Image 1 (cartoon, rainbow, N blue to C red):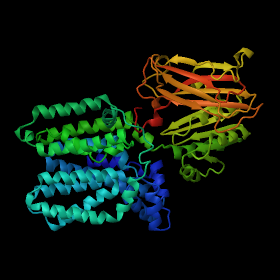
Image 2 (image 1 turned 30 degrees about the vertical axis):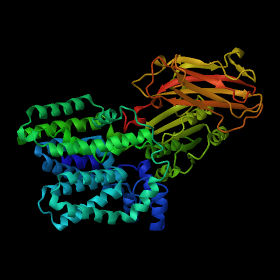
Image 3 (image 1 turned 90 degrees about the vertical axis):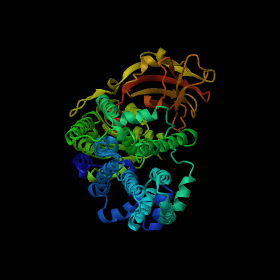
Image 4 (image 1 turned 120 degrees about the vertical axis):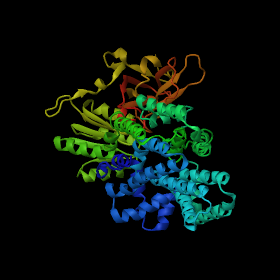
Length: 617
């Protein structure tokens, strides 16, 4: 299992590119002093405790922005954590329980993925495992040594400084020890906590400042009632055979457990309670205050749920243990590699692959422009410089749609390369397509899409296709006649709604993208004209979903052409009812006069790679 854990976490680690959150942390190591690091790099620009950020601050000074050396300590923590988890399982129950639980720990994407990130997760879980390993020895000991108490205090501090939920886990673990501890040891137990608080005290102002921020978790959506089941389905690689194997092992353990296994309720309850408290707290906080729960939130206590789940196993013979472990590892690794495509997705990230493909296309084409959107452009620029790409334009979240459209409209190149990273505004793709209507090729990586467009259909070097060939067109008007145009004025506020039942439009088994584009000519000055998408049940009074595309804060003068776009990804719609009706229409908010010349409504399937690290592929 340790070999499997090491291979999955270290496989070609030097070729493992940085992700968004890693870049964010690395760029925050460039402050000139420690005080600036804490103030600007942690308090003002991060919601995590300072532990990993401080480590990276000094580590980067030694190794630079090198993927191998940056990720090495985190991958090492991931492998050591597997061993600690096995040792805890043996202390709590027996070797069979430890082996079966650890086999899932070693090969599942949930634990592999977060061990490969230079973020607080691997070190936070290592801290929690170290804490539980020492905590277990203390509650089982008659007289722990001073060294043991010192390590216990330090591990409490270590867990608290890594991640908010590793600190929460440490708090739960410490408090639960009061029920199982030898009463003679409670004084020392209390002083260990005091020692941990003293070590942590310099960080208290940081903690209080972060806790007071109103936007903590603000980028997340509220969890649905099925969040936990979704997480478990993800944990087992969205694989029915893996689920059957897991449930089969649980059934085997329950039906074959002996008297000793039945009596091991103390640690069994602890494992279930630690995870339950952590999950329920995060879930309720997310529902009733601010969304904070995501899969990584469960990272620090879920291992103990695994121990609880497989805790009914009695000690088995070595050969029986070996067979079970091999079956779990083979199933886990095969689904990790083939069903989850983990290594393909992790080692082909949007930032680095965009740079590589752009370098190739720019070398192949003589007259091409390159534009890339990234929430933080420097993250893309890091790999563009590696690939020696010199001519490009970067756009960030601070650039308006109006500015981007002006850039595209003024571009005179024959080819236009556009990459949209960080799940950027999908309607920008339609702005490019309006001027460069032919597609040569496109690629999708996690959270990133890449397109090479052509202005003209003829090409001497590369085959081109109609962009529309990617879509299932559900409505299309192309100036076939004057009758296809629709005029608006003060007496016409809303255009006739195009509508269709959702069950005829969307496939629940796929992620789809619905695009609505309308082009027109202004006769008055336009400011707030919109194209609207809404979803509503026929008999409902309230609208279930609403969004609108605007003129991007632009002012359209009389005689000027304009473009309205709005793009809907079906994963944004929760609890979509087949009986619901989707409507698309023009909203003449200003009561102005204009003419809509063309309208296009289409649906295309989004590549599962776009969300592939967390969703089914």
